[in-house]
Image 1 (cartoon, rainbow, N blue to C red):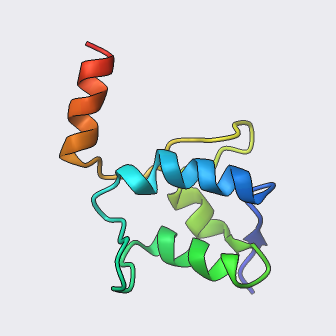
Image 2: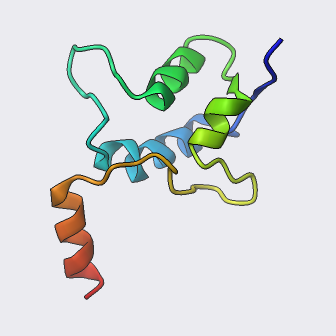
Length: 90
């Protein structure tokens, strides 16, 4: 059996993580199409289940239990986010 863990302590942490990662990632799908990112799929399934994901998906997400919000290890930044980041941090 696969080890399952809960990587977010509450819904606010999950939303913060999504805003920092998924909303800035090329792979994220915010339409009626099914998502293709395995991390996003697992997190959405967890949202409707018991809130846990596999340890493998947690590792893919870059899960760091020491941080409230951590950068996703699989994120592919959008061009808009890259430009915004360069502007904010020259």
